[in-house]
Amino acid sequence: MRYFVELSYFGKNYHGWQIQPNAISVQEKVNDAFTTILRKPTIVMAAGRTDTGVHASQMFVHVDTDVAIDNNTYLYKLNALLPDDIAIHSIFKVKADAHARFNAVSRSYEYSIYLGRNPFLLDTSWQFFKQQLDVEKMNQAAKVLLEYTNFKCFSRSKTDVKTYNCTITNAEWILEGKKLTFYISADRFLRNMVRAIVGTLVEVGIGKSSIEDLKNIIKSQDRSNAGTSAPARGLSLTAVKYPETIRHE
Image 1 (tube, helix red, strand yellow):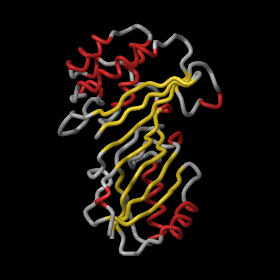
Image 2: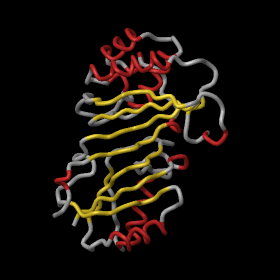
Image 3: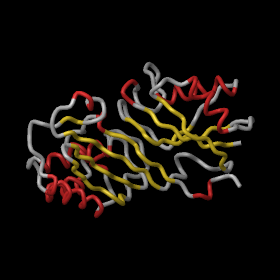
Image 4: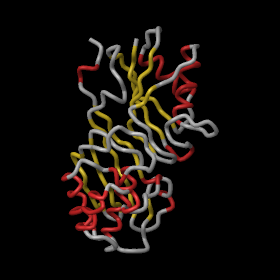
């Protein structure tokens, strides 16, 4: 039987989602919890990988087991085993071929910038106070992203993927007081893509690059032409969507 598990985590203490040979990852902690509960070695498969220090308010994984899982009972047991910065919210049965990664139809991220200094937001935002940002121009630049599909220029170098094509359906900045948030959704994302996009749009915001420069960066398909990646702490995976047809009837 296959189950989907909805969870969230605060990424500060982890070297990303995926298991690392000599570092603590979120996947390792979740695997350990399921292994203890199911009493057999268990590996969960996630909707995607987040980098070191990146957070997730909604992530999905799938797990295979011969044991029928009761949502309420297992939620309590699993959360009791997990550290406080990882939480499981729901477990539901899906069809045998449903896949947390390959069946996802869209993913959404948020990137938080705080225009000033706030010690209470150090772990969840990029505190930007040295220069002024032109948010209107950054939004004009964000709209340009929807005109393209090949985003190799924003992908981490030496990434082993079959295609650099992604369909971005939403990209916008919203300013509320001193909090500036970038919202972006797409069918898929490349490694480091969102942070590279944010860093590049910030360069537009401070006047270092123009919108025409952004178009040329995307067309170049060269990571070295794009901006520096924004700090990981400001990034959160916020939503992963699936077709209803994956659920077990």
